[in-house]
Length: 337
Image (tube, rainbow, N blue to C red; front, side, top):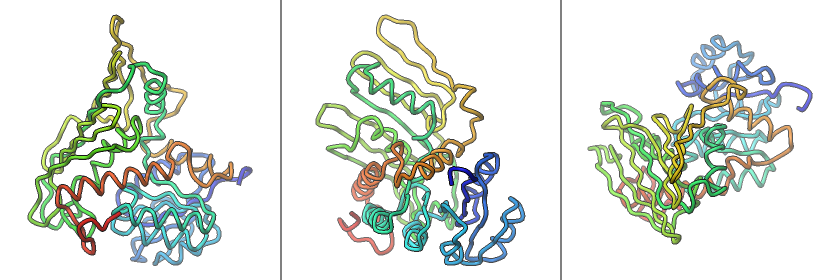
């Protein structure tokens, strides 16, 4: 693999699969060799659009395709466990969209499968691979703002999303928390790790998914994170990190920023902008590059998106949903983890 292109398979053909493929085809050392959908027609249309050689009309065909080095799973959350699990069991490496799964129990099952079959597995938390987010974390870790006191982050879409939309469908893992809340939670835990306390409240739809949710995470260190997500109103989609010596503000689109500002007591604000040498701000570019780097190095997980971190985020999302009263088909109270 070190001397040839990494051969990708795409499982599912929706909007996020197309966006990932569009970024992937611009990478000179990546090749999309196969795509799969439960509808042959969808797979063939996707293959024609992106110049993919093979279109599979079922997931099994892609999972068993020996020419595929790694599969990108782009189904709704509710199918991540089944789709990624099928590929791992068949010997494929997997990049699985976030939220990783519906709950921590399913996420743990995927991690166990990857280790059993000695395969690479990574949650597609592309925010963690963004060079500017990596710079922000390095500054915080180096004490640029002192001891972290608070983290604030929000992600809300204006909608409205009508009944029947996937974001309103419990069977598809609908609601704001898994689709949008995963970003604020992941941002906070990137800087502070898994919280020691969690309090959450939500406004639910008639279908039983959360339209908007607020969560307060706490750490024994005294740090707090105030987080919000919504599919009922567009928010600023900003984030900030406040410490004992200063603050970092990340403007709208905090999960894929082009700049952030460091404020330190007694100093002028410092702006950190994306480095042109890092290439274009393609949403999935750096995530795909990290997967390919790890595969060529023989790694079974990425140090940027470690599996233990993904499991910790899923435990937090479980706790938030439990307090908010959001349960998906087949789940019972306290039985997600």
